[in-house]
Image (tube, rainbow, N blue to C red; front, side):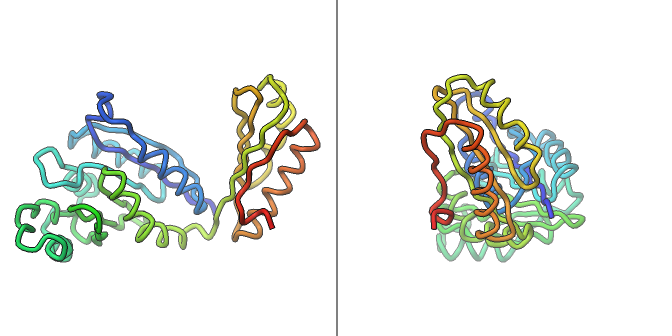
Length: 254
């Protein structure tokens, strides 16, 4: 079963070119790796109306939306409130979230009380690196996941808490390989591998480098089936092209 996810990056500093967004790239790789089809990546400013619009638009085409940024305790951290409004939920103090902040910051927790306000019914995600907890909220059979924008916090929280949960939704994983060819013209390579794009549970992308490279992503219900599909596509590519090298996961190298 194909399950679609989208990513919303919140931050005016990203849209003004002040901060480089690395979160969406990292999340896209992670989500693809656990079997999701990543449908959209959207960046929005720190404006409530834009965040609300973005979330609603992404929910129209996604089963899961992962948002990063704007979960702090300063005036411009408005993601939680905007998500609540977009979903028609109350924006309220979450006692469990505040306890998580207290566990790390003791008496100073009162300084960060804003970070404990979330949409009603949200399940807090612990932050063992920074201050602000994230959260997961269910809405009409879909999931909205909000994480801090600081990459080291976001990554730790995703890998520890979010990734295991989402893996159970897809029932799929993916394996990725990079094939380096001895060909110099991308158009020629693309013509020869075009038919492989019609294969089920396979993504094939050529890259305009010299020599031309090909990325292959294969999906399966487990490591064995994903690797089997990946190996089959690699063999097909090898029959069509002059191959210099293949980089593939250790799991598929046995």
